[in-house]
Image (cartoon, rainbow, N blue to C red):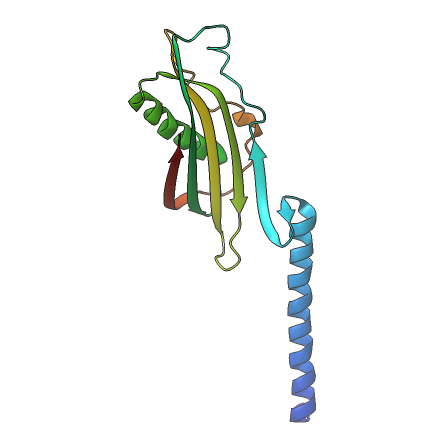
Length: 172
């Protein structure tokens, strides 16, 4: 038994139904991403920050021997699969600490960071992460904290993170 369809009209209706179903699924996904939070306008993003500038508890009650300039370190990472923001913050802070040591400092004071994770429109499961880490370079008799401040406020994206690209900017 064969089902007889009139080719022009029935095929058109079938294609129209499949296309409209696909479009409604895409619109529902966009609405869901927008409503979940972290999305502004049509740009899907997750933002987190350490809050106001602060010094590690290890150095809070100490007086530095010498205070240097404020240094701002900005890095952009392209990650695939997920984003471990805590790990990326640690990498950025270590790079900033290396710069501070080259300037004659051995501690970072008044640390502050902010992080933005954006999902590029065309690449699936890839994220553009921008971290801006700033601190004041100083010299002290006490050791540095060696961890980013306010790391518990870092928001990431679950998954196995692979860093595909890294770009660094440094401002004094």
